[in-house]
Length: 404
Image 1 (spheres, one colour):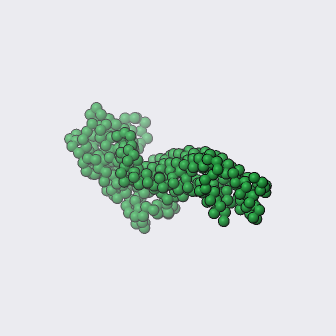
Image 2 (cartoon, one colour):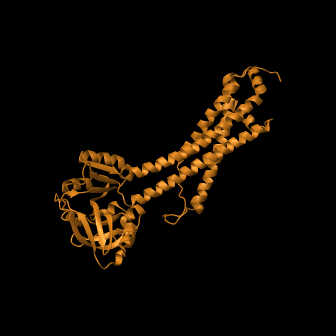
Image 3 (cartoon, one colour):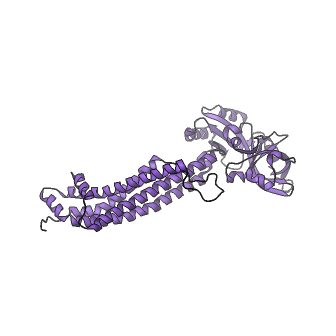
């Protein structure tokens, strides 16, 4: 019954036009705020998905690294046991270290990543070749696959470079002579990759045997072991099982943990923007308090009539609480529908463009997630409920009076 009264009050024209204006302004502000929240959360989801897809081309599902120090020791038996674990798609041994590449007068500091023949099973770099082919050579004839930014810094065309690149790497030695602590080797280039600026300007991929030889690594010594899974959705459980199998000297990192600071900062930005937009809803709540308070004053006689017919305080309170929730539902529903329309147009026609030319895409990516809609709707309803509580309580406490 209280919903019927609330609906009649909601759609009926008030005697004071200001109440109508404040009510519809409140609904409009709620609609605008919920629309902005859905749009912002969807855009952040789009960017997060884009970053994850880019990073997944370079980072493996799991990575085994040392708990302390820079290297791990993995015997052939351990490696074979890991490869035979149920759910493993591929495993690649890694030897990685900072290196100096020199091409004539051009030189650049890079992260040199030595990989074995299984690397294409755990990484998508081979599918992101910008120039040339994915070929790391062998220990005697190593080849370099350069990030496109490093290729430019060295001033070469990686698939058509006639002269070898000089590679300087630190040796694993206790020698105090700085010159003796550096190894010098030569390698040709076979191609370059282009994934994302962070990788393109930082990494060079080559043969693991060459890196281990230059750095004096022991036969069973590596920087890491990268693993890809048949079911990436089971990464966390698999990582826990593998951690128990390897022991405390090793650390097993998921894809999220390999880039924890990046994902954490992206999510923090997302929720900060959400919190700021929620403030708009709170401001709208003050309008709602004003509108409902004026409505209570206008309906004093109606309240007295209801009381004379036996309505208790609880029923009166529910009527005006429902009135506030109707305002919130109308505003939130309108905002969500508008957000859906805008998102659909953006996905279909790429209407809103990104400013600048250094992006991989030239439009704002959008990804709709059902939990965002639930969150935004619940936020609007909770704020509306709290805002409507005070006028509703005041209405329920009004003294019985049928005088005009």
